[in-house]
Amino acid sequence: MQWINHELYIAPIGAYIDPIKPVDKAIITHGHADHARPGHQNVLASRQTIDIMKIRYGEKSATSFQSMEFNKPLRINDVTITLHPAGHILGSAQISIEYRGQRVVVTGDYKTIADSSAQAFEIIKCDLFVTEATFGLPIFQHPSPHNEINNLLKSISEQSNRTHLVGVYSLGKAQRVISLLREAGYDHPIFIHGALEKLCDYYSSEGINLGLLWKALVQDKETMKGAVVMAPPSALRDRWSRRLVDPIVCQASGWMTIKQRAKRSGVELPLIISDHADWNELTNTIDGTEADTIWVTHGREDALVHWCKLNGKNAEPLRLQGRDEELEI
Image 1 (cartoon, rainbow, N blue to C red):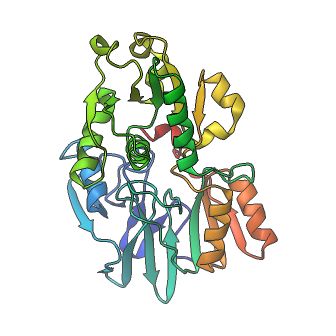
Image 2: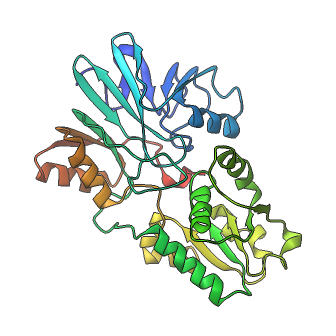
């Protein structure tokens, strides 16, 4: 297709999808820092993504914002843009672009399993499918998140005198893990690091059940014995966490599949909970789109490209720069 290039630039409307540098027109899939950046002139995104950008970067982080509802097409010249839920975090969207009888779908980050803290993923049939591949290796087969939460609750029950310190990214992961705990019946107050506070407040205002949250203050360390404390992964190893009394360090991430990574990070209780599609979700989604051509944007591109070619699809890696789960802060 000549009208969209490997930088995800849509020539007929002069717009980029998730550009890493400030541009005149940007279409943003979701609010994580490796996809949504400040400084663009004009931003098109879901209402919740725009809200999140303003919370993180300020009201004037773009010159103008235009929000779109899911599944309501917008016509710009001869191009039709539609946002479809991506299931990654609240407000995350796949971008469907239709032009001259062809449809391209750009996923951004996505997952297909149910998540009460995000809109449910939808498969969209298309000619060109641009997919992420963060966990694009067969080794990544994520277990049920409910089972992982049960492991956390079991540990809380068995070691009720110790604080469970859970490393979570501040946008999406924190709110999902809290929601999962609430769904499992955990109704105690959950302590949160200050870095999580604004986004947890926003999720609550959008109707996501997070229950009672208390700010984790160092002077309350005795109160936090036996409690769950949520903090960004970077805080698990800094002076803030060292003030807690004998915490059990946990981390919620798809990367916890790799035991050596968990061990190297000093994680005592790894929780394999991911907001990205695993190998089976990726391959099933590609099949479901019925696309003839697949572009793989970031992650483990080569393995997924190889799988696509074995299954009779045209596929190539884009190797876009600046895409990293570690930026999901």
